[in-house]
Length: 225
Image (cartoon, rainbow, N blue to C red; front, side, top):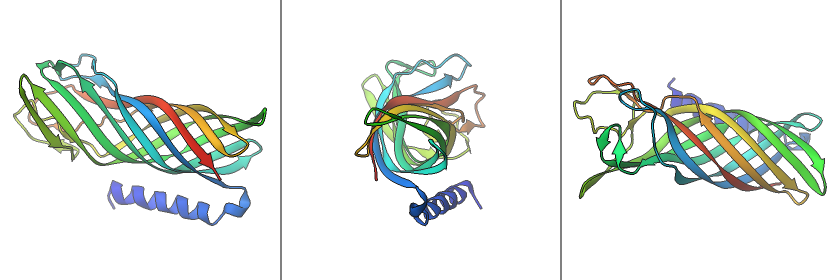
């Protein structure tokens, strides 16, 4: 069984379990948000990546499962986009590049909710798992530009140093967020996310120290039923 099938099975089991347990204090919600995303890590030579942030978004469903008074386990399923942009230099070359990568993401958070005023303050942290499902990479050199679809693979072979549309599908990292949930169920939340997985595929033809990791922060608005 490959990673993609395992990921989907786990997600379906979690959502199915939650759907059977609404009477046990489990709450469901919808969430959407705006993020500023980039890649952290190092380039071909091992130098620190210097990439710009790009606006991206996420949307999906979340589930809060009570585990103790004021404490919850939160999971769900999100469609999220991530990426990065270079303005004039990319991996030591005179070119610009912009990435837009779409993922299906499974959060696995621990959440604390405490009454404050007419609502609840929300604090949460935990890991996430994500699987790439699409995207594109845009490259510009002088007056010449091109767009390539993201290819999901762990390894590839190429003598062309500009072949940078190959990415690993599997991503994981950590979430940290802070927010406030109104008594009517509306939730406003500040989020930050730190990727821990190297997402760029390994070029087995050219020696490279490149390592890209997703990193972002943003704001989201949701509604808990």
